[in-house]
Length: 286
Image 1: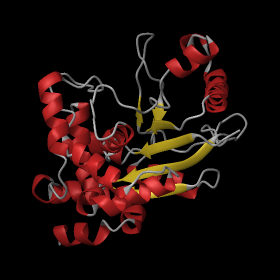
Image 2: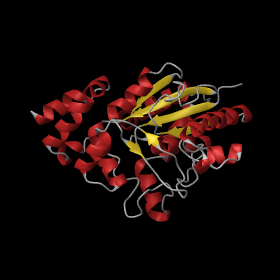
Image 3: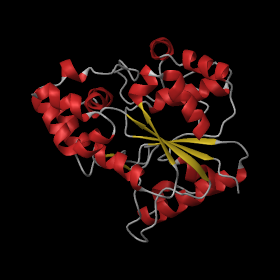
């Protein structure tokens, strides 16, 4: 069986949709419609099990769901000849019953892990979730049980455990089952060509430099935002707020209080240091 699954992993609001827009443009000769992404859904989607295995997810116990989800993804990887680009916000975790990874390594080629300064993430996540900054820090960024929970039979996605921002990154960094390539959001902006080309190489895709540059231009943040404003974005969670919010780096310097910065860096210190976010944060609160 070929390893066709390419995981697009990230803590929420870290550039995952931007990167999927780039992939869509790359696969479509520079054309992109944000409501018709050329990627293959999200790991937490119930439809993967329901469409492939003809089961109702809402009738499954958690242990059954975990088992059937892995079966569904492995089956899809076996059946398709093309790459499967799967978005995932779940931390890399293990089953409480058998201790095995919840994310299947069978059929997996690589995981691209997109990481962004948590001090900027919290601003975008607050807008996305419709919460204030302090509640977002408490409920998500610094919460060991932090998760996206969508309840009820009308919900299209299953529970997504994330943990703290640092726990999430560390979970993917420390696992050894799937090769991981890390991509900083800040490098996607500051060193676009080098960063996106490196990702294309890691995914083992064959595209020219010209095609990569064309895709980067097509997924410029302003263009994506204009599309959302003109025809909406079906992945948007809250109708009244913009999904493509600001897309800036460094907003935290003038939008977060010193107390809020201190709360985030205290819990997430080790991974902030690993990705070069620590020193600037410390200097800001001195």
